[in-house]
Image (tube, rainbow, N blue to C red; front, top):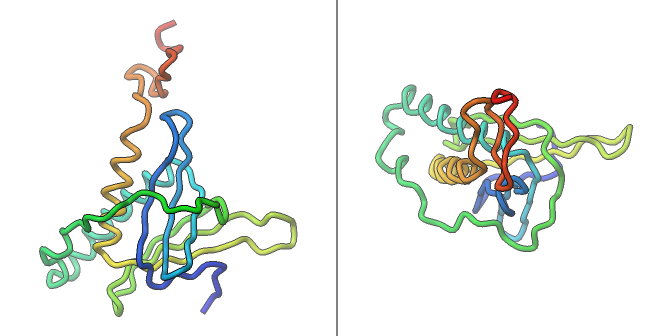
Length: 170
């Protein structure tokens, strides 16, 4: 079994959210297990992809295991999805993977950063969460991503509050 720099199995809390104004937001995936708090920097598109893949995985699990797809799975935990303090990033996520541990009925999120110096091992994290926790994370992450800047219908680029130069309108 590989060793991880941060192994929260299972988590007691997990969220994916952002701080800052649209266009200047910083995105995080954060998890807690008892007294251990891990905050990882990530990109907006990583949060968007995570939400989409969690939803797809939950659908696949329900299709393969109809007995697991009870109404309990659809209950989103009504918890605070904000980031906890102190907010200090452990590393920036370079790669992410997601899987399902059917024996324990847990969704496993694997993340890897980049090595600080040549010859060092890249930091890694593994978070194991319930389907309900991941459903709540996915729903919240989708809302967070959608609160960003509006997208130009012509060129597909974000529109800043100060204006937008659209190459398609030139």
